[in-house]
Image (cartoon, rainbow, N blue to C red; front, side):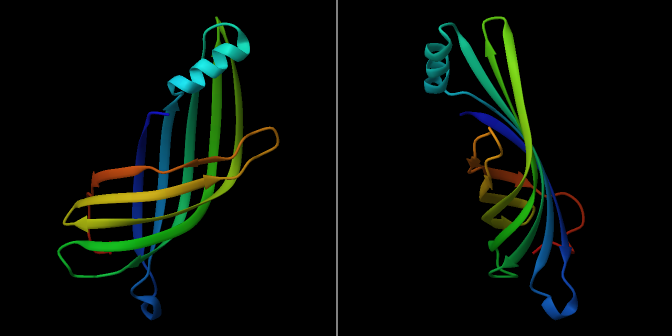
Length: 153
């Protein structure tokens, strides 16, 4: 599926005894459309043109561990849990159906930072709910940080 993702982070320093660790709060909104194979499968199943869209809204708390503080390219690893609301809409002919669920999810990832620019790779897994499939995705994000750098790794 192709799609887009909008995310925001707020990073906080840990207490003095754990000064290398950071706590990062993430908020994410994502929208994905069906790929050609899924559209073809849906069209075959319903006997008429069909499409599917998924919307995800999540909030996570992650522990961040910087690997090489003070270097030009500062890598770090992170992992955490959060709550994600997912909604799937299937359009068939002139009508559509919508199914949604909110689940506890987890994520793992890493990033490399150079000044305000960062490249992040993460894996997000949202477990299955009753009558709702498991959702996992691997977004790759290239972005820029704004604001005070005092709490960032």
